[in-house]
Every structure is written in structure tokens, then in C-alpha cells.
Image 1 (cartoon, rainbow, N blue to C red):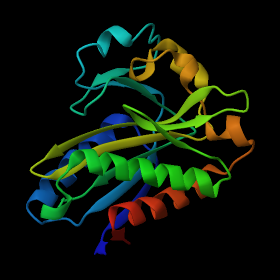
Image 2: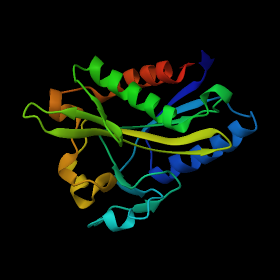
Image 3: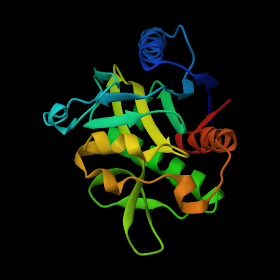
Image 4: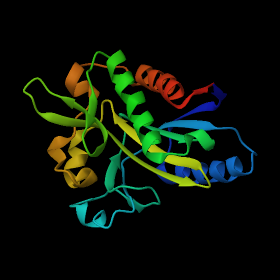
Length: 212
């Protein structure tokens, strides 16, 4: 198992964390920094991935900043109550399969939800993590979008723990209707976001074969 550092940034503005990621990517490419996992909650923000339809899926951002970035995917929302995880790791030769990397991220979130008593899984053909509600509806808990430069990964995943779902109604998140989104709290009741963050770090380490 390879080593990495886990840094919990608390609450930090999106642009600050984005700059931090880019600096770490550059350093990791030159072996000037270790593999790193950043955990953070962002103030309200919408980010646009590289998908052509992303901007059109912003319906009414209102007073929330919209930022175009280099990750894959569509528009998504970040805000309080949501754990955002950014693994910045140098993939070795045996790890250089980005589809498998995404599946590993999904597995870490599925395991994190299981440890909170919530059954979660994948939706065929759609990146992210989903759950089936008591009435049989399929709902999305976690969105993902990554980037990779010289086999160093960045960007990552956003797990809705206690997020205010009203902010999703201003966009078509990942191209879906906003009603598809849910939170862990909506499904299991009161939940400690700090505890979930710690579990997520543990499960990401397990899935990506990294240890702090």
C-alpha cells in the first residue's frame, strides 16, 4: 500500500482549493509532493465541466458564482453539508485506467454509505453513486468528475451528506432533473458530517491502495 497525506481543509472557497489542487498536481509531477487527498466543504458554487451542454444546464444561478473548470462532466453544485474529496495521486503503470479509477472512487463512496446504514450502488452507464428510496425511486447521492495530467489525478467527487437540495433546483445537475438528487441525511436521518468525512477518507485509501 502506498502512502499519502490526508488534508482536511474545513470550509474553503472553491477557487482557493482549485489553485491548491493545481499547485499539488505540478509538485506531484516532479515528485516534490506526496500523493494527497484533500477534503473540503465549499461555500455555494456551481462548476461547469468540459461537456458541451454544461452551460445550458445552468437554469438560474442567481447570486451563486459559476466557474468553468477542466474536469470532465457537466454542471454540478457544491455547498455546505457536502463533502468534496480531491485525490491528487500519481497513477503508476498498473493503475493507468481512468475508468477503473472512477469505479474505485464509486466503491469508496458505496462503502462509506454502507457504514452509515445506507445501501448505495451504481447506475448502469452513469458515473456516480445512487440509492433506491423506500418508494422505489432512484436517487443520486454523489457526483464525480475528474481530470488527469501526466497521470496525476485531480478534481474528484462530491458526496451529499446534509446538503440543501434547493440549490440543485437552479441547475440540471450532471444533465439530470434536480429531483434526482438526494442526501444521506434525507435517507437515514440525522448524520454527523465530520464522521462521514473520516470514513470517506478511510474508504478512499482502501479503494485506491493508499494509507496515511
